[in-house]
Image 1: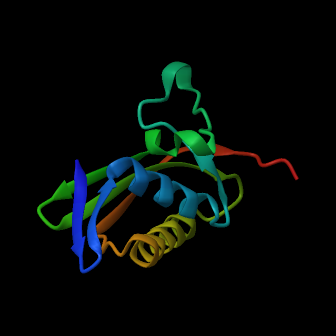
Image 2 (image 1 turned 30 degrees about the vertical axis):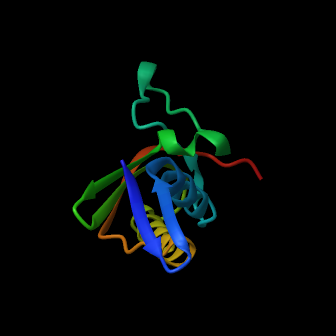
Image 3 (image 1 turned 60 degrees about the vertical axis):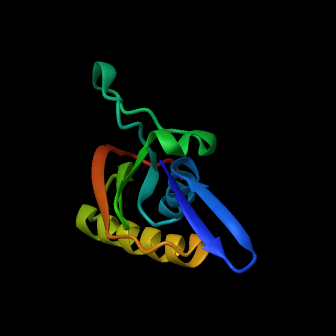
Length: 120
């Protein structure tokens, strides 16, 4: 699925992969995030951290009419308050997508896929 925008200067098409990459980049900038995890991971009980070019595997963008919902699968740092991390990621992703792409986001759902000890 894609988002079609028509402006006075022309026509813009934004794919879900672009939205997922921008959302993943915004999420990993938040304190307490170790990385993004694949939505289909947990093979053998191990959550694999995705690299920057694969953020779209850990973010699911869903569109219903004009509403956009985002599901994010993240790995958090040990010793941090998970509810605060999730709230910060939700706020940051909504803000970044609104300012970068001009897209209002209805919901950002966070799924914690693992907890890791972060090496200093």
